Length: 96
Image (tube, rainbow, N blue to C red; front, top):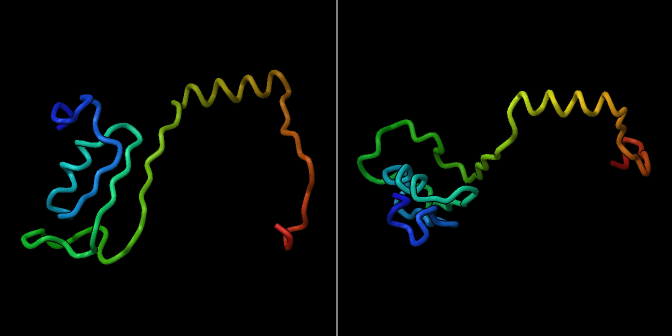
């Protein structure tokens, strides 16, 4: 699908008006860090039972993180350099 987009990297925002029947195509057409907005809550005719969204209105956001090796290296560096967070103020729980 990406080869059909203008830059070959995908689109920034997909408006998905059909639903589950074409959602996979929308995902494949989307760029890295893109947004897909599904319009409507009813599945298209012929979509098998088990729609994971049901009638819920929700957002799913996938985020990228580093590898476990990167995380462990970061923690070693924090410990080695004795880094501590700077805390400006502390509030009691009822004021949080």
